Length: 476
Image (cartoon, rainbow, N blue to C red):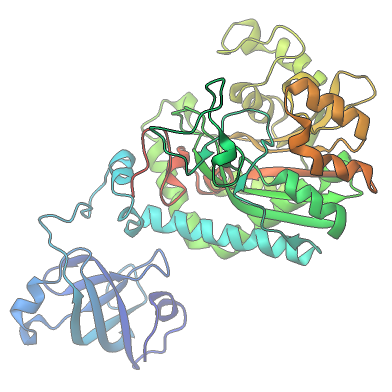
């Protein structure tokens, strides 16, 4: 009977004949094959009677060759595993040339593995990361479905810019070398496929709001795109966003929702990815040994996850946070790269991490930000200078969630759109929501890769997405 490696290790019955298929991790002493099929971090040991096996066949058992093995499941005599397979039949499904196969059973740099992203998931670390990513995805859908949300697929091609940032990828079928031009020399987009200028979406939020104002509670979970020429360990040009939108929900309710949601999905991973988290924790401990003591994390990976799951998030206004940062030692001693000297400053990752890791020592939700540094759709407070925005800050990451109560007042929203230079005709449908049955509503966006980064203990966002898209890099 055919089994996965995970099934055999968890509940395989001894002395039964089993068949398993997978890839060779190692083959030692011409006798012991460590086989892995991706179902678990663990390999199953397959013991070959090499004296009665075709010698030419055994020469083809190389790292990453695909095998089909049949044999008897027995109690293991060696250390490190409880069961093993005594091989009776071995079939090579696909050879792997040891001279040219790039990923050998040794430590490779993460940069080298990025260059071989099509094969890196066969390593223990990347197998674990991608299984955790999958479980997190499932947990996200599970949370929302259990809490009465409807899943909405918002468009990837859009004519609106939700952020007002202008850093978008253009979608066009016009001839790049000879596009049709208007009399003033500008590109005549009326002749383009959609009859107007269109881009890849930076967020599904605006469209999700339209559904929240009909269905009540909705969420999107899909790819988003930013054309920022940013070559950092925290940015991707293509990434996935989770964006719930809820009618009749104010900022306080939005903060409650975000905190409950994050705790739920992390708890789900801790319960369902124990082996992978344990492996990634050991990997992180080894990696940190090469760092100076003061740069090492004070918590192990599982402690960091528990830190979020078990602690109430501290809620702090932006104004209070600025006072704390202004009077902090790193600011007074000029240790921050970006010094905080006045109200209105846009907080950087170093400030966010200081608040979480040094000052409050728990996850932090900042709220009521200056209107000038936030998007047009956030509800203006009565003071006229702050908006009902909130960001959730995590240890090691900084901002992981950004959200707000949305501006539900028609006149105020029109003025805000005008002030940002966006053509209100482009957002006529968005404004309609404020004309026909407007109501308080809120939502947030969570960058999925940042959540995977936090959950796996990795430090570069390119290592938690299958095929990273970054400036000058669209390989695979």
